[in-house]
Figure 1 (cartoon, rainbow, N blue to C red):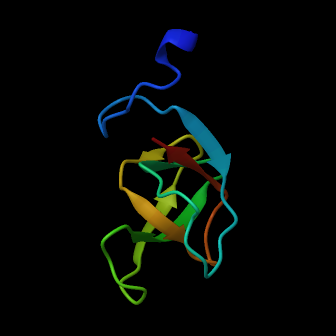
Figure 2 (cartoon, rainbow, N blue to C red; figure 1 turned 180 degrees about the vertical axis):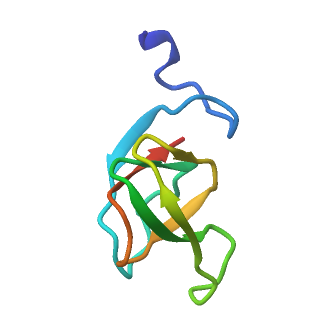
Length: 86
């Protein structure tokens, strides 16, 4: 599928890359178009346009759930997730 390698992706398009997320105090190198929950639990994250103090927590997530929020950081107290990159 090299025909699509350099094609731009819209937000509603399927993921082109996944990367493991290390929860912490630093922003992702690239913002994620969503988060894929890999282990059941709670996820606290910062959406791309929120300030550092405007975190958002979703509780009781099941493994395999997808959070369709453009995200710049997952904070330390969170479940195991993967970032869905454009």
